[in-house]
Length: 304
Image (cartoon, rainbow, N blue to C red; front, side, top):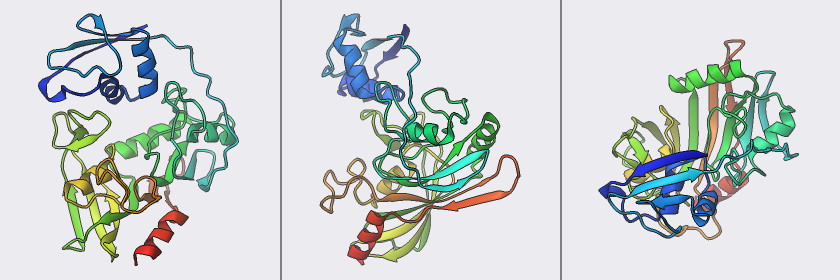
């Protein structure tokens, strides 16, 4: 059994304990943490608490994570849209509403389940049984290009390129409002939000440098169609950066308006269009382009 402890500071107080722990422990889902709470596995100041307990400054939290048997992640015959594939890497066009990898308590219907079936076990093992082959992620509601590594050599090579910011990652997005300039660069450290642990925020303690380059492609009816190129790759980077300058993504109810501006829109309008990297074996540049999904094309036509 693993024991995890936290000391709550003033800027963190007022948050539900299940939400706080889910934000701090990204490998555990909120529902799984709630099960631990229900079983008395979370103690605050040496007393068990319920999921709706709101943490206070000075609280000492002790979480007992039960030892789990190695999860049995099963291959699933889920169709993949393949942009490129060879013996080292696989580049897929991830659809909307698909989670990239399993988390505790949720082991089905993810991209990992799909690639395990497609690659028949030929995946890198560096990130363990929950994330075989996964070297980077995109959000559940973000569509587009994602590279999978089929062996550890490829994984190490791609991880180094990510760390050096040498991988090309260009996104297409629809954002609220108009820009005064055609190009701009957004800079600002990004880290975990101090009170809402499911969100990221700008210029917070322990934040890491983040840089996003923006190019305006087209003015729409009340919105702008833009390209964002990542220089760094922090969690929710594009969403946080654009919201910070008053141009949240259309459909982003976390960093923008709480209700979608367009009925029926599920999640933010963000698409990973271009992914370029140096091939781990040949040394040649590989660049893949994921076409805009149908829902995105329809939105553009509607807003023109």
